[in-house]
Image: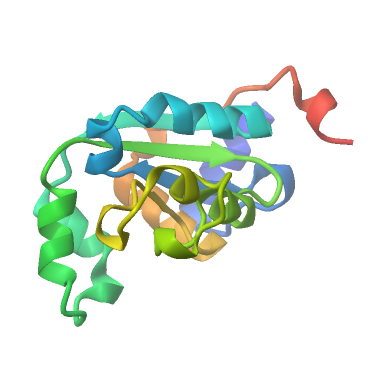
Length: 169
């Protein structure tokens, strides 16, 4: 019941999740889906100890993508980005855990794969910035916005991870 209350409270007031309840939005882009990297990416987040609370395969509409990438609308690559992101299915996910936004960004690597270290998702699987396999929220605030764009509240699961006492002190 407490979990449901917290979930509703965060949804209504968009106050953000903190601590072990912080959430982030992660998307495996069409190139990652086509290259069959979804399982590997899921595995990395699970192995790290994060909890999956939302997952779906979607063909994103242009309207959704325009809203998601609104801050990039004046960039010369915007139209190409929309075309690329609508070219195939996307795996949309919500992950939960301590500092998950910051940690997920480190796990993904730099936007430009050439700047990404080996061991990161982009460092291991990407060559070119225009096909960089994965998207992740860059702040708790953008995570809130992106999660609410891609998921309805009833699509997010609130469940107790029995491994938490092995992950968190």
